[in-house]
Image (cartoon, rainbow, N blue to C red; front, side, top):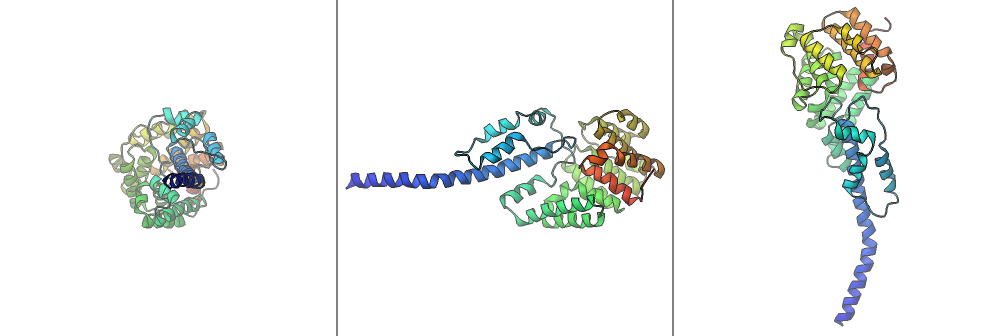
Length: 310
């Protein structure tokens, strides 16, 4: 009896394992799939905006393999494959610097949205995306309403909402804009552009000299054009030299040099010079073709100032 019972139990166990194992592997694959999406989001967030958005071939191939794979790959194997591409080598070897493109929206919100951890977090992520879209379309008031809604839903987002600070600048809500950028820099002390935008807000409130006294010092930006722009705002300088230095460089460098030259002139109350350079940024190849949020900002700036031509 014992032998028969044992044989039956062993047989039943085997049959059960055959039916349960695929379910277990399927669940494992689903969770790993979520992890891969999260890893890709954070990888893209950590990447400088000068890199165009692309599908990572190993990750894309792996996602497709989930449909037919009989057993999940190891996490380490897949991470190693990510760094086998040029983009991966860039991520692996670059200095650990963070820019304003990090947390769009914040990684914590992305993770909650993927794992179903918090309905408010998911709704906050959606609100931020709506706000960014409205800003790109020129609806600055609507964008702030969405960003504020995101903060109400998930207060963690405020520390990363540089987009809100930009919108506040164009609504002449300079004190709130400066506060937003200072909060952001406190979280990310290596953010050159937020330091500059804080200066731009405070220059409107207190004048250029006082804004420079209050200037937020940050770490070294890996982008040469932004290092030069940062030094120009921090210590004073010649915007024409900034543009000339990058006029024959990469398209994105010329765009950023022109944009920040124009913004520098605006802080100095030199509207004609500001108009000349910001329209040049809009009309540059990068300004025309890029989906960079700052390319949209240059157009929104011109719209808010009622500029249509030089």
